[in-house]
Amino acid sequence: MPVLTVLYGPPTDGEAFSRHYEEVHVPLAKALPGAIDLHYTLAVDNVTGDIPVFAAFHASFTTREALDAALASPEGQTAQADVPNFATGGVTILIGGRPTARSANLTSPAHCECQSDLSPLCPRSAV
Image 1 (cartoon, rainbow, N blue to C red):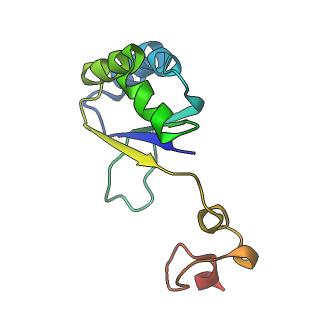
Image 2 (image 1 turned 60 degrees about the vertical axis):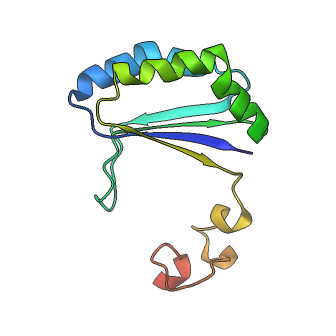
């Protein structure tokens, strides 16, 4: 299941960003045809601190074709056209696939299928 992820860099005015995002942009995002399981987070806390992110949005779609059609739709075009109205800190757009067994079990050492236990994200590295 493809997932559209939008990462927003720190804006010049966090309160104005949050207000516009929740009052204007979220309703536009909810109108994306075919989007399921939409959620967002404001004031994201970055663990490593090297990639500043203020907010994140995620929407799942049944197929990549449905995601592409949503972005190309009038609703998708309207949502994209709204981004410069509040995203003064830049935007990164990512499209990911469905979670795999490997990524779904990263917090369970008993079921870990990591390629390397040397990764700090691998639960076996803490054992």
